[in-house]
Image (cartoon, rainbow, N blue to C red; front, top):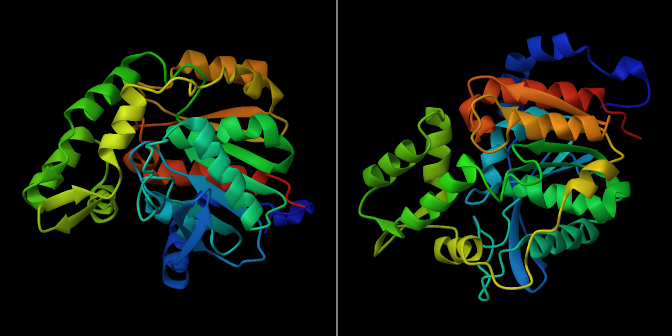
Length: 312
């Protein structure tokens, strides 16, 4: 477990060399525990790995994703960390919000409620895309609780303009609410995410969809999430998060896919210039979905980073 003693921290090169072995050992010894908790009036599901008394790592998925998207990473960390991956409201096995309140301030409130309910004093926080927005937003007011922050594919302004934002809007507008067969669903995901691995595709089919009498339908609230993103209700605008970048006081890893259409290299470099605690890791052969496009490089980067962080 990472600690104040330098002897407990691996050399980055050694961490990368051990990755394949860790995968084999961890996969055999660590399986997810399905947990449920009521937060802000909704029942939430989260997957948990590792010892309950180990340093906690909370993971927040992207816009239409789910907790188990981080399963490969969690099985690498579970020998030394308590990994908690949340199905955010309206996703996975968590309740849909009847009011379709799928906005950053509500997600951050849910995260705060989870942290308090689990009595977590300090913890590591990782988020991808929407999850990274929520993580950075949370850090603005609760930075003292973070041991470290990992932002995958988000910088202030990325959600407002650019090719990635245009792509996400098109996807939300054009995504069908159901499919006639699993083969049709698989073609949809492969067309939408051409660079993800076969394992990542299988994960999306298993955890983002379910079979009903009416066909193959989404586990997430596709219509409500799309409405909140495309036609946001008044009063839910995302605040300017550049002050949150400047305010970060914990070690922070900013991960960018080298082929990203969402987080520009210029935005990432600006973030690093504004705060010396931020280090940039570019994931080769990866776009916006770095943990799916190039899992090995993504996992190596996270492992190196967490091994470098002092844990009380």
